Each structure stands twice: as structure tokens, then as C-alpha cells.
Length: 345
Image (cartoon, rainbow, N blue to C red; front, top):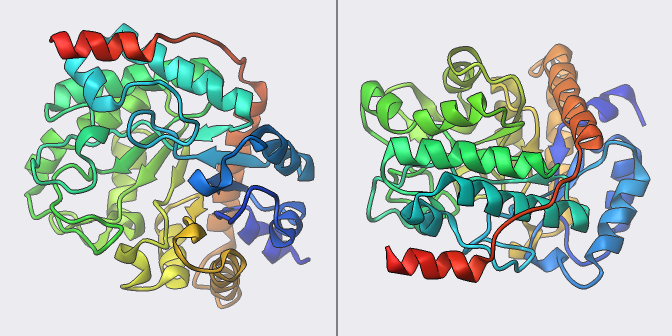
């Protein structure tokens, strides 16, 4: 194992198949892999044993999952989704629900939740965000995004505001193709950015990028856009971990490809590359190696400066240190009770 391999592994968050730790993943964890992302096919009665086995391989290994509550849940909790919480519009309830999700994640050995969705769902025909969003009003979404972040992180689970700078005004699902938002910069700033600013102000540890093009800012998708990621850093003041949306999604995989997409993302300012969910029909180890090898080649030929990878790895290590030091908390509300209250609104 070389120092270059350690650097590259330190910015990767692959998915894997099955409910046990594959041999390739165990070896990668021992060789500095930042973490792994759990999807539905990884979750079963043996989840605590699985996450314990992952954590045993290396101190600071991060176990992530896209646990949003509502329609996107891996732990099958009774929690209402973002749309229901936005309709209720009680920030204390949103924070309590997020605390319950965060506590359940920590109990299951999950360190990092890829939630909340901070997208303003202003496009009624949006095929992928919809009820995953708190609503169509930037002010409401901002308040509830911040409340969710406070609740989840108060329970010791790192939160992730997604999908920066906004996936709520697309009519294309980035799992299937590359969406484009043609609105001018003033509109995007007023409509889409406030929830991310609120999340940053609330201390969110991570922000996840959108595979969406915003031509008013850059021709490249946000995940690969230096201007947009600079906006997140410099204008919004975010100093935590920038995570890519999964590079196996067609918006990346079917355009530039997973390996080149990962290179462009890290070069633009992404700190942690999520490879995606291999249960969608490809080999987990092959995908991991393709992305890892592409980054290694880019490091070797100078496309990726060593300093950029070292900076990304340092931020990921800081996130792991926060998780290790975070006090775990409990709390929450009866999900069914909240749904009943929402139905009365």
C-alpha cells in the first residue's frame, strides 16, 4: 500500500452488496478507506454487527446511510417525512423527529445520515424530490432544514444538507439523466440557496452536491463545478465535508463516467466521493476499483494535486473526530401522532 493509495482511499465512500463485510471492503478499510454507505439491501437484523465489524477495521471509519425518514428510510422508523413536517410547520417537532432519527442511527452504528433534503420543491412536476422536501417556500424550507440539523446532530449523528445548490426545480431525475436548471443567478440565489445557508448557520457537518447543471453559474454539473463549490465555501461560509451525490447515477456515469466524474468532483472541491448503490446491478468491488484507480492515475499525472486530496482527507478526518466526540442523545415524537396532526391541518 502506497501513500497515494492512502490519500485516495481517504476520500472514498463506496457502497457494497450484502449484509456482511466483503473481503475487498475489509482490505480497503484497513488501507485508509474513509467509510462506506449503507443502502436498503445492507440493512437487516444483523445491522449492529455489520456496523461494528466495519468500525473495527479502522478508527475513524465512517458508516453512512441515506436515512431521511418518510419515503426514504433504511431503518423503517415511524417518522413522518419532510413534506408532512413542513405542512405541520412546527420547528420543535421537526427537531424532535430528527433527534429520534439521529438516536436510532447511532444505536445502529450509523455515524452520518445523508439528510435532510434542503431542496425547495418549487417545481410541481419534479420527479425525484417531491415529498422529500419540506415544501415550496424558501423561508419554510430554511427553518425546517436548520431545525432538522440541530435535532439530528444533537443526537450525535452528523447531518448532510442536500442537494446543493438545489434539486427542487428540476423536471429530470439525476438518477436517469443530467438535469438542467435554466433560471438566472438571481432567481437561484433567492429560491434555492437560503436553506443551505440556514443549514450552514445551524452547524451542519456535511453538504451533498447535486448532479444538476446551472448554466447561470457554470456549464458543469454542481458536483464538478469549482464556481458553485466556491460559492458554498466562500459565500455561505461552509467549512465542513462536501460529499458528492452518487457517481453511479446516470447524470455522471452515462455522461463523463464514474472515474472521470470522481476526478472532476474532487478537483472542484468535493471531499468525499459517494460511489453509489451497487445493488442497482453492477459489481461493488469493480466500481470501487474503477473510481480508486482513476483518482490514483490523476494523482500520478498531476491532474489532481496532492494538496487537494490531503485537504479533503483532513476534512473527512475532522468529521470522524466530531462523530467520536459527539454526545449521543435521545428524543423524538410519536410518528403516527404527528401524521394525525398533519392530516388535521
